[in-house]
Image 1 (tube, rainbow, N blue to C red):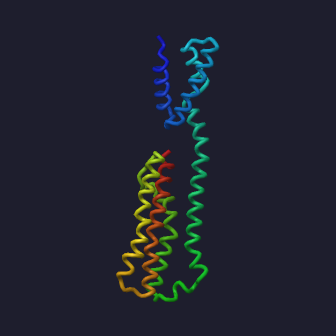
Image 2 (cartoon, rainbow, N blue to C red):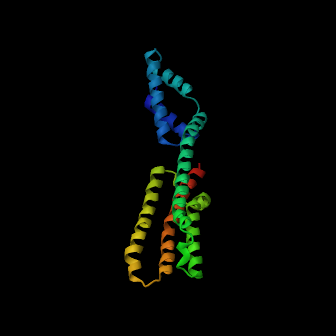
Image 3 (cartoon, helix red, strand yellow):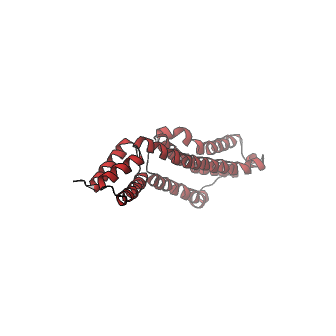
Length: 209
């Protein structure tokens, strides 16, 4: 005797094995399958005939996976472009004070301090883009919600660090103006480094698909 729930469970298993990997598309497909079956049963078909006809109309898993990929890809591409634009604007905002006040930011430093300061600026500017290249060395976290939680957890200590540096470390050390400027530039750089890691986690997940 035909068992509808068992047939649907087997259909889901076959679709997952063949290519439909995410729960949301599978749930949507099952909903469409059941609606189609109900219409066919009302039209006079048996449950088994309605099921077979609905499966035929939905199509093969490979073709469906390709269609879902077409729908998802533009959204992922838009997210990636938005993140890159945010990085570019953040870097420009970081560089703006230096560009608008040249040579004042470096006037109170000796040659060694200037080179150390420039190195910190270069690291801060380049680090946010590092995720585009280092993603192959990062762990792959396919679940977007888990990946977002990991990214937020990574950001929190970095956001706390500037407060610790400003209110705990700086008041307790004796530094010249030039040394304070260099130390501040290097204190900012971890924010950029972790920004690159956050982008890299997204790039690693996308490259694994």
